[in-house]
Length: 249
Ligand SMILES: Nc1ncnc2c1ncn2[C@@H]1O[C@H](COP(=O)(O)OP(=O)(O)OP(=O)(O)O)[C@@H](O)[C@H]1O
Image (cartoon, protein in one colour):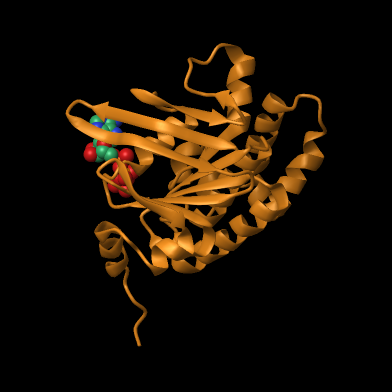
């Protein structure tokens, strides 16, 4: 459903992404892992449309997203194809809007004809936010609650693909586990495909079916998550795995 083909992007002398290709099936869950500076975020930004590639294509359900966007309707249509949730929702949430307000604004934009009140309640319920959180401003919420608001906003447009760029990295392990469980449930309920960008192999092992490993802008290994983590073929993957802290005995 999501097809990424031959993506490349340079910044001056730095080749941030080199010939990256992969596919993500409908309702699937793919992780992109790699060390700092391996090109994960650049790839994600290109996929979402925040950055233009020097070469390559991104296609969702056969629609090529690489060409320039034309007009409001096309921009909205593309937003419904792919949504992204970042590590720090503080930066992406409007500080003046409560969860209810942000959801009704998003719904009005994308679905002007539906009953927003019912859908807003449904979305808040889906991400586990209660009445108090629904009317609170982002600064009055915890990090985990803010991330739930960001998730609800992304889900409001019923995207085919949800990109999560280090979306649980800033949360403590307990909240992280709650959000990962929530994401697994949401994937089942909505059929949205998930693309997880992370440096955290613990996260991908819990939540992804397939995995690609990036290094210096290139994919060095790929396959079912269990195989890649269980029998890593590339020296770089083995190094990433060996640097995961082991639980104390
Ligand atoms: N806007 C930019 N201008 C110049 N160089 C950039 C820009 N964005 C990324 N880069 C460079 O491209 C390379 C890949 O960066 P990218 O952020 O994609 O890596 P990453 O794998 O997401 O790393 P991290 O896990 O640290 O966020 C890095 O060398 C980075 O310095």
